[in-house]
Figure 1 (cartoon, rainbow, N blue to C red):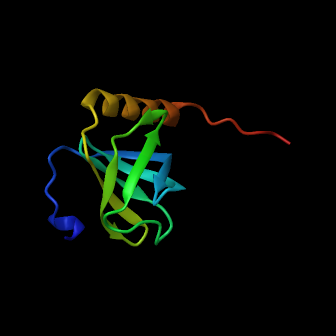
Figure 2: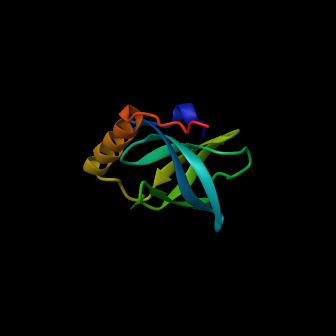
Figure 3: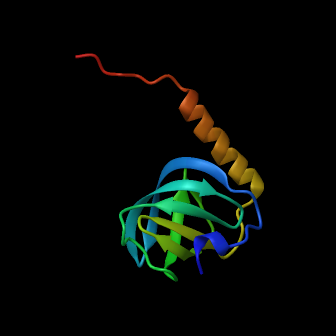
Length: 110
């Protein structure tokens, strides 16, 4: 199954968050690229996961539903959740990301 042949049940929302996850019982830090009620796209080093691997993730302190790798393309992978993430939780995570992006960036002066 290619990533282009998968039909979407809900809209994917773009994200850019580093997320602590577990793949094959080991901790892997991945970048959350997008998120929907039924799954997400993640990025990490190529070879970090294979189709069918179980995935757990904690996104901004919130446990995402248990998922499995649906497709892999180099360092990108699609995760299909076994349950669904509530739309209000997705809205909250998107608003938190927008707040962080709007915050002034502080730099240390030497």
